[in-house]
Image 1: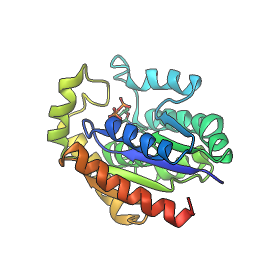
Image 2: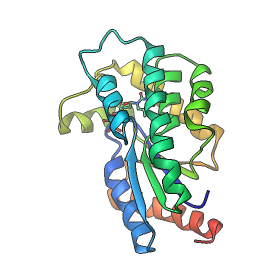
Image 3: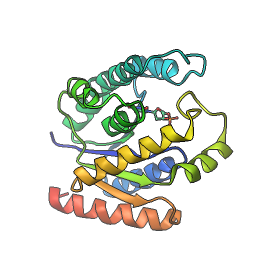
Length: 209
Ligand code: TYD
């Protein structure tokens, strides 16, 4: 595929939205078309699934149901949104992708290998060119996120859950260091941007952009 597929990952309050805007600016300045999407969500069907997933009233949802709805949202976003944009040669920036399912459902919920297996079908094998993991301690992230608004169904999980998710991200980054770049999210917004830009320059050079 011609385009570039970039994903951002990290726990609550890691500052992903600010850095997504910076990444959009980076590619816009190179004259490339940038598509910004998010998971769960990104298409009308996927946004409906997002509402189900994040609704605090759905406290009885089983972990397997949860994992499959995240995968269903992704299957639609990949086919309706992401692949067509990549085929047009555009840059797709996705706020969370499969790594979130591995961190939250495989590690956080304890579902293990089943999650990667199901997501092979959801993505049809599509994998990001680069992933930025904005690494923030769960406690610090929670304190930042809580300032912003009401907590959703996942955010209200106990702290141990968020530490399992964190451990999941650590393992993902360790296992795939070429794709997953760990960014220290406790640094200043500008320092984080500079680090991300360095990685993007390197990626662009390797792709001849
Ligand atoms: P969102 O408000 O998009 O979170 P954030 O602003 O932190 O990115 O909510 C998405 C929530 O869903 C978040 O708590 C992470 C969780 N999630 C999963 O558990 N599995 C997944 O596959 C994805 C994409 C998200």
